Length: 297
Image (cartoon, rainbow, N blue to C red; front, side):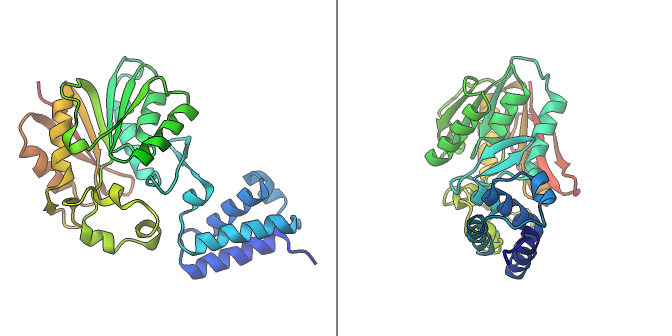
């Protein structure tokens, strides 16, 4: 007798649970849906059916990849961010829900229809840059990343969401931008903020599959450790310096932080002249998440 979808999902969920991956039942459903070519509604409606054996074998291969720790987003090649679908590859970080807080703050503080100029430092998949261009139809965005492979992914995402004419790309280290006097209204960033010590303790899904460069930054310029202490020449100080150079007076900085890093981030900002209204906003879990500051007049 052929295996039903219900039985396959139960078996796949158990396998993923034993492997210790996050959300094993959800992973099993997403991977089965991809292999079968079904949407979520059909997956529920036909749980008692016996799908084609070849499709189930294909689903089994995807489940094996997930059991080995590979993130679902890399297996599927996409991830949702702020209601938009983004292509993701192992060359870029998987967009996180926490990063959506940067977009929420931008929408709360800036005029949606204004002809704004924006800078996204460390763009990765382009999640921030592209979403900002979509949500602010009058904006022009410059997306910067040191990784050429990441920029290729970001370009494809800009094209997929029909904003390629308003998003430009620059391969550069955001700690030494070759764009003095950019005069932008917003600098948004999700920079590397994981210290080398923290990196060693990350889950295998992150440590073994996501690009280390996007997590810890270039060698010799780490982030802040779990106590918020600076580790080496921290990238946040460099980012704040370059953001100040690029922003117009009154321009807004929105920079994602690691949880618990708010106090140290504010200290770094206060050590640099030319900023006002510095604050750290929490995410839905109440953890430090986004550094907000305004360039002084």
